[in-house]
Amino acid sequence: MRPYLIVCPNFDDTSVGNITLFDLCHRLNKKGQTAYITAKIGNPKWINPSITDEEVQKRTDWIVVYPDTVLGNPCGATRVVRWFMNKPEFYWEIMKWDFYKLPDNGEFTFTYHRAFDKKSPVLHLREIDETIFYKGKEKRKGIIYYVGKAINRNVRIPKFIKDKGIEIKTGKDLFPKTKKELADMLRKAERLYLFVGSALHEEALYCGCPVIFLGDKRVDALADDFETMTIDNIKKRISKGDTQVDEFIKITQQEVKRPKTVVLDFDDFSLENNNLFYLFKLKKLLPNLKVSMFMIPFDYQYYPSFTDFQRDEILKQIKANLDWIEIIPHGLTHKHREFENVKEEDYPIIFRAIDDVFKKYGIPYVKGFKAPFWLYNKSLVKYLDKKGWFLAVDRNQPKSPRTKKYYEYNHSIDEKFWLFTDEYKWKLHGHVSGPSENNIIDNIINLTKIPTDATFKFVSEMLSIK
Image (cartoon, rainbow, N blue to C red; front, side, top):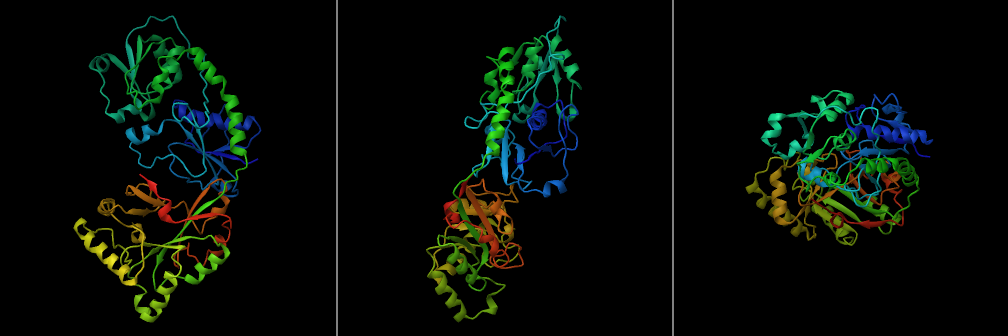
């Protein structure tokens, strides 16, 4: 059985989202699985063993569980599980996290609530301590309210609530400080006003406190629960948790066999620097091979070392193989900061020069672009969008500006991409020569691990849409 690694900060009993991650680890271990947390501090009442980075590196078969706020795959896991704790619109529209996107590359997804994702299996782990949250006999007086992350929506809080209400806060400004103090407030309050979906709703029901929702139902998936939620419904949902963990184990431990779609791209290709010898060798091993070459129109670094006769010979070879070689512009001369500070008015001249070079060579090229060394500014993005071109972006710079259509690789060819058996899309990136570690010469053995029955696609065929 593959072990589980659950990515989470230190245990925080005031955060339901945090608690559920530790709860999953505990339940997995109780069911005979091997599960660890990345946090240093767990729940002392549960089985939450921590593990060091060095110990993690000793294995390659981890099933890593990421909450939906974690970007990418920082653990480099070969099997990834994402647990949605809110609906995507919340991250796009409210939190303004431009990196958030639905996975489309063989990852397993689970949702904490059906309203967050209509397709993924539900994994709803929740415990409410009825020795703390229960109805009391105290006389109710005053109101309380909770804004939470709705503050990011510039929510308007009515004056009577601000003037007369007591605000419940989470995070670093936590108030009240303990669950017992919270329960005491809920037992005494006349009503609780919520501006965002929250587990406070359930805890208030257990304490007999009326709840009024004043948030935006358009972006709050949990709001629909408020009108129909009862303690019986909550208990029914909680009771399903153990069965859902069994299903989680079954799904995540299964062997996955998917046919592979492979995109292979190389940077710094030019008439003077190309290593076509290795490309042709790879083509013999992989008859279906297609490659996308990000080509430097005028390679200032190598140009003086070649004669026109040599360039003509390379041109003939390229033109004879354009059925499986795709050409995409890669800068103009490939100087280090060539596109980092270009002014908007200069782009028409630069791209006219790029077009002139390719016309001179008689090489057709795709209307896409990659900036040398991934260095560029927003004006390039604006210009490419205007032209209808795509931009190739660096997976390691997720917050860099993107065009409306863009290409993003998911593995470098010097990495053990072949271990990612769950993925059905390998978008592989390399260089035609050193000093980059992912050059084709040093990694030709890695490339032979691509299945011979893989379907190959050009970069232009596998674009993402922003």
